[in-house]
Image (cartoon, rainbow, N blue to C red; front, side, top):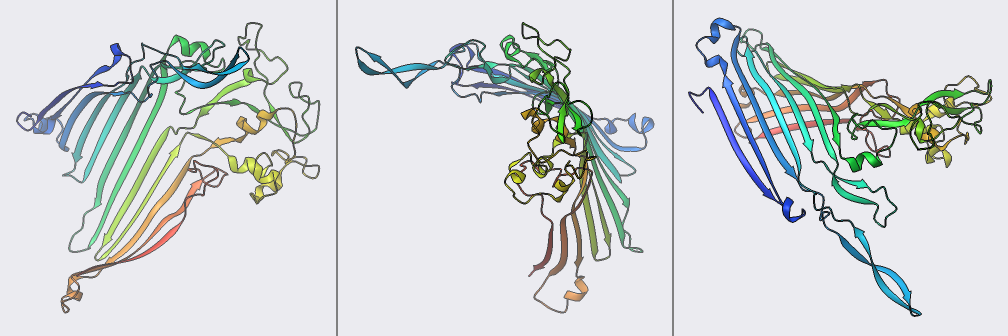
Length: 443
C-alpha cells in the first residue's frame, strides 16, 4: 500500500496433482488485485463533491481444478471370463482409456468494481462486473467408435460467464431525540449468463445435432420437444403423431435427418430427436433482494424480500396432476387442478387428458410443462421490543430484556402454478411458514 490510497497485491501459485500424466502434473496460477481511493486525491472534491468516498478496484485471479480422479491412465478390470481348451478362465478387459494430454482445468476471472458513499455516508453502495473463463474444462467425452469403453476423460472446451451485481444501502431517516424514528433500506440486483466459447474436436463429434455448439452452457440450457397445444379431436390427427387421441399434447415437427444423419431444417412427418429445440434457460436473468428496517423508540421492525425473473421451470406438480406422473397413474393424492383435464365432458380444455394419449413418450417432457418461475418472496418479518434501562434499574437480576416475534416465509407472489417456484426436488416439500416467539434475557 502507498499513502493509504494505492493498493496492490500479487501472488503466484504452483499446484501439482498425480491424477495427470507426467508432463501435465503441474499448473501455474497467478493472481493480482489493485485499488485506488480517488476520494483521497486533492482534486477529487472539486470534481465530484457529492461523493464522500469513492474507491476503484480491479482484480484478476486463476485457480486450477484436478477433480477428475485418476482418469488420465488406462486400466483393466477382471471379471470377464472366457473358455479355452474346454476350461473357463478369468480374463481382463479394458475399463479406462488413457489420455496423456489431459491437463488442469483453469478458471480465470477478471473483476472490476467500485465502492462509494454519498450524502455524508447516508447512501453507500458497490458495483461489480465480472468476466470468468473456464478453459480446458474437465469432462468425460463419449467415444464415437464401437469400443469396450464408452467415454474418455478429456479437456472438453472453454466456457465464459459474464455478469454484474449492484448493492445499495441507504439511511432514509436518521434517528433523533425528537422523533425517535429511524428507517434504513438495503437493495441488491445481479445478472449473469454463461456461454460455450470453444469445444474440443472430440466433444463436437459426439454433440447432439440439435444443440448449439456455442450456445448457453449446459447447466442452464433447456433443450426439449416443443409443444403445439392440445389436440381436441377436431380436424385431422397430426401427421407426425398418428396414434394421438383427443386430449393429447401435440408436438411440433419442424426438423428431420438426411441420409448422413444431418439436420435438414424441414419437417419429416415424424417426431424424433431432430425435433428437439432450444426453449430457454432455467437460470434467472435477474436476481434481486430488498429489505427495510424501522426503529421507533424501543420498537424495531424489519422485513426482507427477494426474487428472480427470466428463468423457466419444469412443473412436475402439474404433470402429476394430469396423469403423466405416478401420482395420478396410481391414484395417489394430487393437485385438484387435475380436474380441468380434457375429457368428453370438458372438450374445450387446454390441459391434457389423464389417459395415455398415444403418439409419443416425449409428451411428458415437452415444453408444455415449462413455465416462468418469476417470483417475489417475503423471507422474514421481525418485530421486537427492548425494555428500557429505566424499567430495569430497580432490580439487580436482568441487565437487558428483549421480546420479539418473527414470521418466516409468510407469502410469495408468483404466477408459477406448481407448489413452490424455488423447489428443486419435485418430490420434496415447499418452504415452510414459521412463527417464532423469542425472549432474550441478559443477566
